Image (cartoon, rainbow, N blue to C red):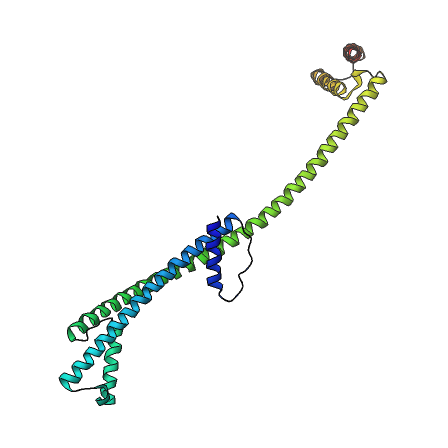
Length: 273
C-alpha cells in the first residue's frame, strides 16, 4: 500500500508540474484507481517515446537520403537546389507532394502506377460503398415513412380506445350506482315486507285473507262460474216458451234448488279456506 501511494504521489507531481496536487481521499479504492492510471500513463509515455525515436530515426534516414541524392545530382548531373528554376522547383514540390499522398518512397513510374491504381480501386470501392449506403438510406427513409404512418394510426387507435374506455368506465360507474340504488331499494323493501309480516303476525291475521289465498279463491269462483254456464244454457230454451204457471213454477223451484245448492257449496268452500 505504501509503495502504491509513493508511486501515485510521484506520478501526480510529474503530471501537475508546478501546479499543486489536488486533494483526494486516501483509501484503498482511490489509491488503486490512481495507481492503475499511473501505470497506464507511464506505459503510454514509453510508447510515445519509442514512436518519437522511430520518427526521429526515420527523419534522419530521409535527411541522409536527401543529402545523398543532392550529392548525386550535384556530382553526377551538376544540378543544385540553387541552380533550379522556380518552375522546376514547383515540379519537384508537386512530385514530393504526390509521393507523400500516395505513400511511396520511390518516385519512379513503376511505383507511381501501382499506387495510383491502388487509390483508384479504393476510390471505386468507396463509391460503391456510398451507392450501397444511399440505397440503404433510401430504404430506411421509406421504412421510416411507413413506420411514422403506422405510428400515427396506432396513436389514433390509442386515442379512440382511451375515449371508448372513458365512456365505458362512465357507463360502468353509472351501472354500479344504479345497482347500488336497486340493492338498497331491494333491502328496504325486504325490511318493509318483514315488518309488515311481523305486524300481521302480531295482529293474528288469518292466512286465508292474504293475497295468495284471495287470488286462489277468485280462481275457484271463476271455475264455479264456468260450471254454472252450462246450466244457464240449458235454461235458455225454456226462456222463450209461453208462460205456464205450473211448469214454470216447477222449473223455477228446480233452478232455485240447484242455485241454492251451488251457493251453499261456494259458501262452504269459502268457509273452509
